[in-house]
Amino acid sequence: MEAESARLRAISHPNIVPYLGLHQTPTTAFLLEEWINGPSLTEILNRKPISAVEALVYTKAICSALEALHKQNYLHLHIAPELIHINKRGEIFLGGIGAAQQINSIIEYPHDKYPNLYFSPEQLNGESLSPASDIYSLAALLYELTTAAWINGKDAPKTNEAIRKAHLDLAPPAPIKLNKNIPDHFSRMLLGTAQTA
Picture 1 (cartoon, rainbow, N blue to C red):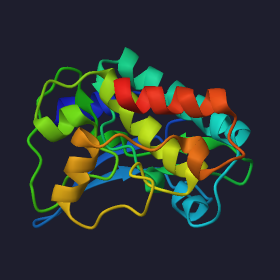
Picture 2 (cartoon, rainbow, N blue to C red):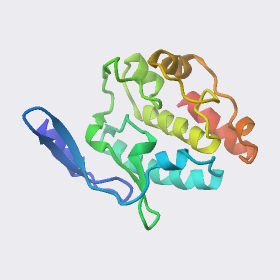
Picture 3 (cartoon, one colour):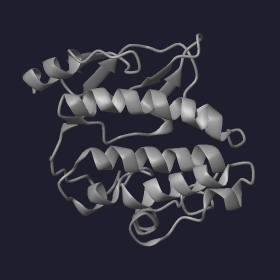
């Protein structure tokens, strides 16, 4: 565990929140990372849909961070709006790398907490994981950013069973049907990424 933590601490990238290590008390363990002084995407999701141009700005930064992780043989696997922050200078950071896992890992998630709203089908099925898992999660998040709806075209479900079914069985509505301001080619690209990643 300590060797893995040291490898993650060594990852440095302008779009990754620096991981500081594992802190343990007699009863609890914490993954520590630097504080980013600025809002997370959670606040942005509470507003209206963002434009395709703005979405591409976030995409470029997050993809750059994921590429750096993937080159080090790690997967993020927990992409979520609360882990993406924008500082006072407008710089975008992906946090949560302390929980990253090796590529080709097979992970069993506790059923009382997971699945996460942005988990990939491979995560939900307990299959071997690849960079495609992170790309799927990012596409699901961008769908929400540009439509103000979850991938079912409505509000996110409240139960794990419904979340799982949506990721595995349902076809998301085309983003352009929910936000007419999205260019058609962007809508098709986003839908294709979420379905094929």
